Length: 257
Image (cartoon, rainbow, N blue to C red; front, side, top):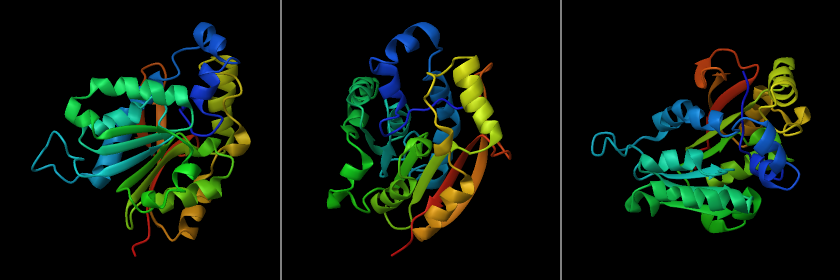
């Protein structure tokens, strides 16, 4: 039971995998850190789609057509491209240029039509939000495996809300701050099994669901559900669970205007 993240900010897994300090560790000592993220798509993509699908009758192969989605901390585009294949217009942002380059390269797996609707930008969410044209622009904002790495969670949540349209969903998947999460996400994943680079996680930055919900309520968001997420590394399979003590997903909706 662990989570393998691509994250925003300087603690991004692409920073730690591809910079000079961690690249040799990744190459020689660790399992593929992207494997669990790829399999997570089988859980998070239907979850996201269930809240924003518009065209299931007209284009069942493109149920997200007509939706603009912001993928915060997109990394190599694993989630962005999956949403793009369903017809969404996706903007993926990540401050790590090497991750964005890989995402752009991977976008060629899409058809030319879908690829034209998928854009990747090397930037922080704070800088991205300085452009007022981006305010209240997106039909959905996704921050998957990001919140537990940001330096200022309050600012991060405020910015996500600022970029979403009124009454639109904001999705988070992240790690709870519990003894179980420390054991599995740090001790087991980094120190024992060495599935992740040591030092990737900081327990102090893990996010309790009640703290995330409080910040969203402060932004006058309407709270949706919070669901636990379970990962079995032996089968590379994710499932929803009632237990939120390690990984969880949360959806909220921005205030209507």
